[in-house]
Length: 321
Image (cartoon, rainbow, N blue to C red; front, side, top):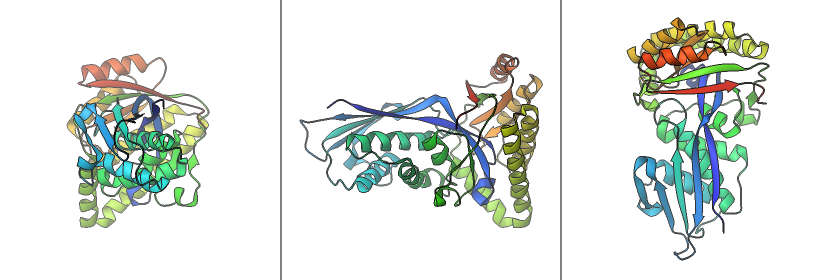
């Protein structure tokens, strides 16, 4: 039997991170320049039910039965086996690789889960629907983020720009995609600082619990920014979107999820001609995004490198739905 391969992209959040956990909308788009890849190979000479796991990027070479019960890869595999009602699959090797930086706000964990679930379910002859893949990936996301919103698994599964409200759209099967009428170009700069989302989300929750009125105001203001951002995306107004990204960044700084390294890259991008710039994802490190024109793209990228970005990625969003 030939090997089965599946991939899943990274993602960036344009506006709304953290507030999305508290019922406000957020906008996210896929980043296809980086991907997670899962390859399933049959092992006919091994005992049925044996699953070898290879994840060379993190130095993992083991068997499924030897992984901790709450390891994300173990959970992803077992969720697929449960969904396909297969107790003992044919012996196989699951090899997972990824070019998505870990703990950087680009959705590496969700992408690995999506790719794994698609490859494994196809190998088993019972490919899972997108709705199921997204829902199962959300369960794995709880291991990474504690209280995830569901935005990562949604945008990565469907690979479209989405307008997302927690516990609403997917529950009704009404995922809202955004029609983007012209190209919007982004340069993504990595601080090189790993920042697990769960820690930032947990700290924001503690701050919210300490002063709910103040933080509810921040979250509601973010929701208003997101709604305006959707309008300018659909209208093709990059300058207006850049201003909204800057407004969102101000709120993210106030709620305590920015850091000097991110702000240094953001300033450099703005000075180099970006329409706007902000952190993307959990914050406290990871990546920032800058909205640029075709003419300013290269100079913004150069400015980010000079300001200390350890990696530069590019993403263009247009006509994806």
